[in-house]
Amino acid sequence: MDNQWFLIFADALLILHTLLVAFVILGLVATFVGYFRGWQWVRNVWFRMAHLLVIAVVVLQAWLGVVCPLTSWEMALRAKAGQAGYEGSFIQHWLQSILYYSAPDWVFILTYTVFGALILASWFVVKPGRR
Image 1: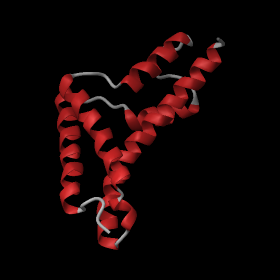
Image 2: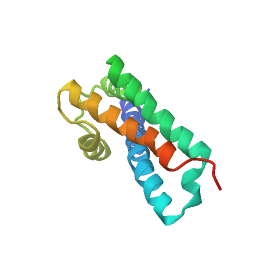
Image 3: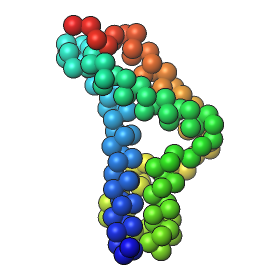
Image 4: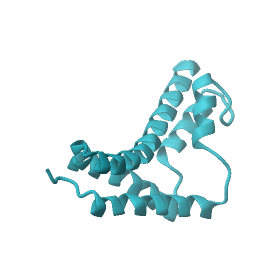
């Protein structure tokens, strides 16, 4: 396979990863804003279950010290393309600066856990499935 395809797939994974992060963050914001604005879609059980599941996976990975499979897969694709680290395409450069930053592990574990707790709390404040 041409090295360019490995980079395209790596960039696609980075976009997917960014979309999942946005889903978790914006999903929580939308849940509370929707509660106050009367948006019924924020009570959709499937939306809320997907939202809780994504953050639960992130929190579990953080506590277990497991690197996100999307990150590992992306790095492996970049390595196959002969790229070192995260230098590369425009998409990769800008999205990478949003997702990846340096901090001690405990900061990530605490942040993910607090965010997960907020999402779990949203289930009690904005009960899913109620019409």
